[in-house]
Image (cartoon, rainbow, N blue to C red; front, side, top):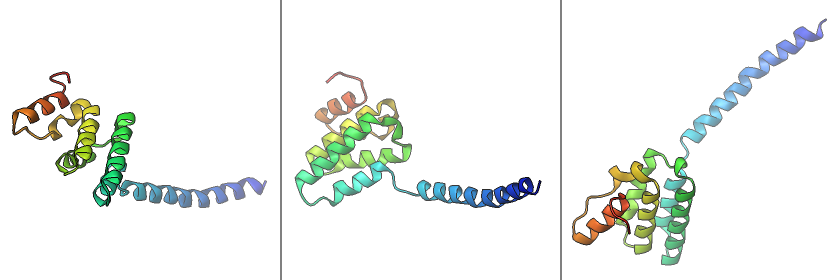
Amino acid sequence: MMLAPMFFLVLALALPASAQAVGQESVETAHAPSHVSRSADVIKAATTRRDRANAAIALSYWVGKTPEEVSDADMPILAGLLTEDDDVVRREAAGALGSLGARAKPFIPQPRCRDALIVSASLRGMVSA
């Protein structure tokens, strides 16, 4: 008979500690940088064109495979890669935004010339490439 009350006492003491651990874990992951953010940092920190290109290609592939993992906070980061000097980085960023579809439309910059208009329109899905 004493075993049942002792079990509930141990359970009651253990629950708050495990709930606190779960709460602490979710706080840590909530502040962790996203995959897009970390990848953009790698691209910008890369010292060779090859490393930048590989990181950009990997990011574009990841976004294409897991678009649901890309948050609205990641959109400006991807759009910011469109202004990089490296053409591979720009191309892969455009591809990543294109694979996000309508969600990415507000983040695509306005074109300044005819060629940019064609690229922008194809990203927005208005014309076929």
